[in-house]
Image (cartoon, rainbow, N blue to C red; front, side, top):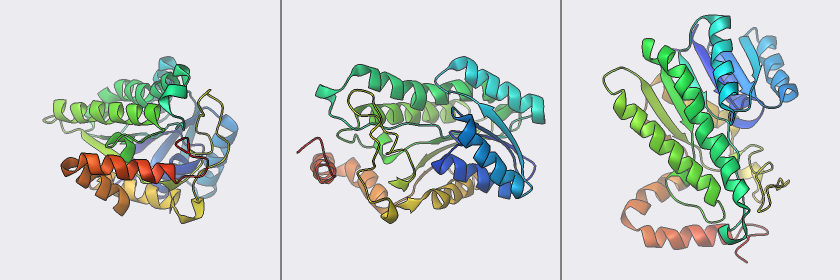
Amino acid sequence: MLNEKVVIITGASSGIGKALAIECASKGAKVVIAARNIEKLSETEKIIKQKNGEVLSVKADVSHEEDCRNLINAAVQKYGDIHVLINNAGISMRAIFEELDLKVIKQLMDINFWGTVFCTKYALPYLLKNKGSVTGVSSVAGYKGLPGRTGYSASKFAMQGFLEVLRIETLKKGLHVLIACPGFTSSNIRNTALSKNGSMQGESPLNEDKLMTSEEVAKRIVKAIEKRKDRIVMTTQGKLVVTLNKFFPKLIDKMVYNHMAKEPDSPFK
């Protein structure tokens, strides 16, 4: 389904984005990868080229509108079209709101929400022409507010609301819109999560060995794009939270709080 299609993936220098780039290239896609760290991005490019895949690397900070415009233009200049956009670039945080520097929430909104809006806006004419696909890599935090993650949950709620409206607006134009929600995934998003003052957390509070791999998440997202699904929640735990929250929100509030309070160095202790 992706053979010879032009696929743009943001945040492709590590984790889920890197795995998505490699997975799409293995399907025969012409992959355009973007990230702020061009050195790490070149590692993704190298892996794809070693497997005889087609790839273009573009340095881009999705929180900057002009970078997003340049990314789309670079893809079109190189390959002449765009068929799939995967908005994967994202950052997390871990701190309670009363202690949080507001610049942290702004940074998360700029990357997680506005990055999706900017890239989608400039790619949209090509996606509509091709009846293509736009994906937002979101989170269960976009369905249920997670304590200690005010900025992260807010940005993912906003992303999902934006994509849901886009899906409805283009209902008769053939655009496919996917909201993909991994559960806790073995990637570097928690290592680079911001603390209350905006510094990087440095260490993950979770046992990464017990989490779903980035490669497995990428395979599920690509499969959902090929099947043109509207939304996917990838873990049993995530599905339970989303479903039960519709009927027992107060109960889930308590369960989510207790779960987060058990994390190492939890801000609720």
